[in-house]
Image 1: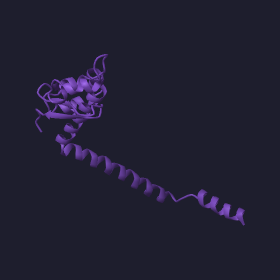
Image 2: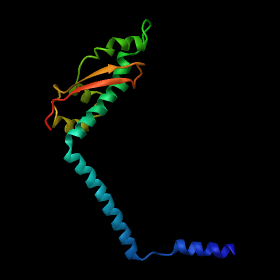
Image 3: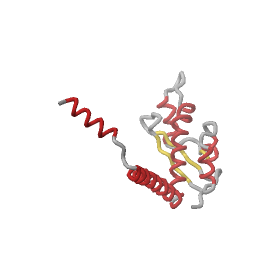
Image 4: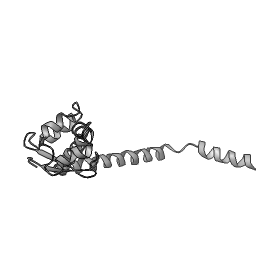
Length: 150
């Protein structure tokens, strides 16, 4: 009984679907993929402000978490990270321009730079980063001043 059941299952799995069904399924898959791509492109093109601001936010976060935090708040023999960060908690780190953000990390954001700089001025778009207690690399607040034309 078991072998008969296995043979039926194998026949069902090995049976060939008609070419019309294959092409119909393939067409549905291709059209679905095209619809998703078009939806993503239209969302990006219809709201460039949101896209540009999100890219700047992502770059600024990466800048603080993976560069500034490690360089400016590295503990010394006399001061801990928390003591160093407290200096900047109220006043923030010195102003960082969009140009500095885009050049940081060996040009990792070069592709984003073309999109961002088509809307925003590299020297007048600035951020200020404020570390927050408990002063880990994920505890901070960023103020943005956009000099962009959307």
